[in-house]
Length: 200
Image (cartoon, rainbow, N blue to C red; front, side):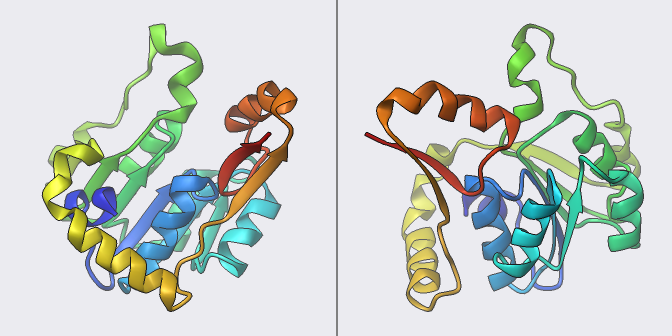
């Protein structure tokens, strides 16, 4: 909520792109953006996750980064470009979206960069950052605790969406604490949907 609303300033009819859209954060962002009247494009890995996004989470379009050219797919799905990009992945996908921003005042929200976590000593930043200047766009990171003053507003909206069934919190449960290592690898290889939980 903080990233999408307080930082990304999502508006009705915005085109919102979400990377890592089938994960714990991504699935919530997709649903929040839809509830606020945005058109949502989710990026995820594999046809099953993409179907999940459109059939269960309400995304208008899902792009399979493992089997499609993301840049071309974005151009087809959003010919006028993205107004908001909620980034959980970084790397090449961030560059793909930078190259497909709306002409004026697009907002990029940096939540995470899971594509970079396995080589933190050599993190690769965006090559196409000049698109920000060319399109009068902005890119901001955030820490949720810095927006504590808006917690009551967030809690009210999220609670209402949960009560009305407009927001689901999907979980992928791994049974047994002895499978913790297996579950940890699932975070990086994309073998789960929603919030990954290990139940002892």
